[in-house]
Structure formats: structure tokens, C-alpha cells
Amino acid sequence: MRASVELQPLAKIRGMGMRIARHRLHPARLGSLAWATFRAVLVIGISFVIVFPLLVRSSLAFRAVEDMMDMTVNWVPRNLTLVNFQIAMKHMDYLKSVAITTLICLLLAAIEVAMCMVIGYGFGRFSYPGSQLLFGLVILSLMIPPSVVMVPLFLNFRYFTIFGLLKEPGLNLIGTSWPLILMSLTGTAKKNGLFIYIVRQYFKGVANELEEAAYVDGASPLRAFVSVMVPNAGPILMVVFLFSFVWHWNDLFYSDLFLKGMKVLPLALQSLTERFAYSWADPNIDGSHITLVSSAAMLLYIVPLLILYAVLQRHFVESIEKTGIVG
Image (cartoon, rainbow, N blue to C red; front, side):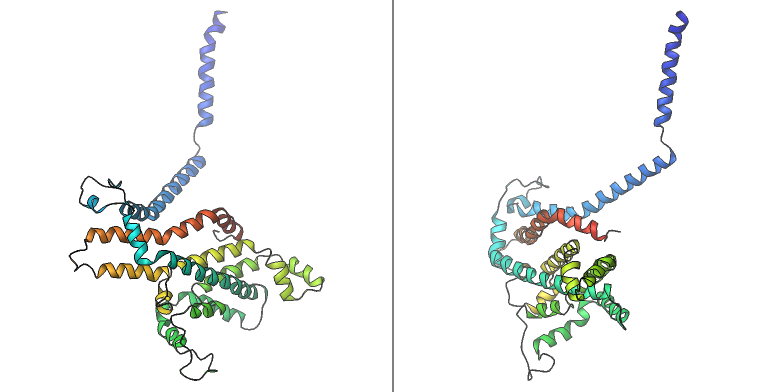
């Protein structure tokens, strides 16, 4: 009886040793843990780089001028105020600029979705003489800086003759949204080469049986595209639409080139920045106030995009996963 009692602690120790051995990290598990840690650190670092400027601008936008002179204020303002936003909205004519910019971006995004779907479908599902050369030119368009073609584009739309059908000097389309609309209709607008490439890769991965079934039922290639392929391309539609909308919203190059005189947000923000930049010589305007108002204007500029991503985040992530872009 005493022997059995004395053997119980020894059995417990052996059981603990076996459990420790089972939980001991193997090299493969240790490697996966190290890789997961590295990825977490990398994602946190990239997120910090992206979010840090937004945090800085948010801290400055809600400050009063007195806080800029207070050495104890670092991140959280001592005197919260909305005056900076009111000044920025007034100088930018914010509500009107947002409405016009939203309408233009929605129109351009819808046109580019339609045209890039048609062009990408043609490259992805049909083979014809010169198709590879044409697609190579599409990829080449991504490598050409917009500044290289700035002068020809400006002259083309300043003296627009519709391929010589109108008498010289033609129509002056500068100061209107028609240059951007025409470029979107022809698949040559901002980043359209990337959109065509994404759509082409998506359609190349779609099973041929879907089209063949439509052809058996007597459908033409156009009918098969509209009735079969487009309804199954919802994820790619979402990706192209969001990318197009955001890039047009943030575009200053083409806005400054074609939309001079229009109330659009990129030009309104640029006008506000330039107006304050030329006000340094005015003794009535304080340099600290310029920084605060500029920060508020930048937040007002990106708030609609943040709302858009917040509303469509789930659909956007699902679309990215289904199209396989991350892979």
C-alpha cells in the first residue's frame, strides 16, 4: 500500500513530462510562428506608415491657433474647434465641388467599366491576327508617363476637329468634362490599360462551357457576352468601378489640364493651398493658421472616399478574393 502511494508522485511527474514533450515546438511549427510574427510586424508597419499622416492631419485640423504656441500640446488639442473646417469649406466651395466631382467620377467610372469590359472580353476570349500586338500596346500605355503626352492631348482637345470632320480651329473642349469622357469611351483614360488587363485575365479564366452552352442555344457572341459573361463578372465590375472612381477623384493632372475653371475638388484644394501660399507676405495671416486650415481641407478631401470604402468594404474585399488579384 505504501509503495503504491509513493509511486503516485512519480507517475504525475512522468505525465507532466509527456505533456511538455507534446507541446514542445517542432522546427516546422517554430518556422510558421516566426513567419506569422514577421507578417504581423510588416502589416503593422505598413499600416502605421499609411495611417500616421492621417492622424497628424486630424490632430492639426481640430486645433486652435493658440494650441500651436502651446508646447504642452502634442497630439490631443487643448482647445477643440471647427473653425478650420468652416474656413476650408468656404474657400473651396466644398458642397458644390463635392457634388460636381461625384457626378463626374460616377459618370467616368461607369463608362470605363462598360468599355474596359468589352475590350478586355475581346482580348481574353478571341484570338485574331495582331491581337497580341494590340494587347502589348495596351500594356505599353501603362509605362508612358502622362506628362509625355500632355501637350498633344491638350492641343487635340483645344482644337478638336473630330478626325478632320470639322473646319479649323474646331471645338474648344478645354474647361469641360468632354475630354475625359471621350478618353473613357475609347479606353485611353487614366489607368484604363490596367483595367483592361485585369478584365482580360478574369475572362481568360472563365470556363469555355458557359459560352458554348449559349452558342448551342443560338446566341451570338454579343448575346453570350451580355447574357452570360457579364452577369458572372460582378466581382470584376466592383473592382474596376472602385479603382476608377478613386483614381479620378484623386487625379490632379488631367483635372488641371482639362477642367480649368470647373468646381472640382482637386482644383479647389490646389487653389486653397496656392491662395494661402501667396499669403505669407500678409501680416494679418498667421503661418500656423495656414497649416491648420490646410489640414482641415485635406481631411474634407478624403472623407468621401473613407465613407465609400466603409460602405463597400465587404463587397470590395470579396471581389478582390474572387478575381484572384492578390495571387
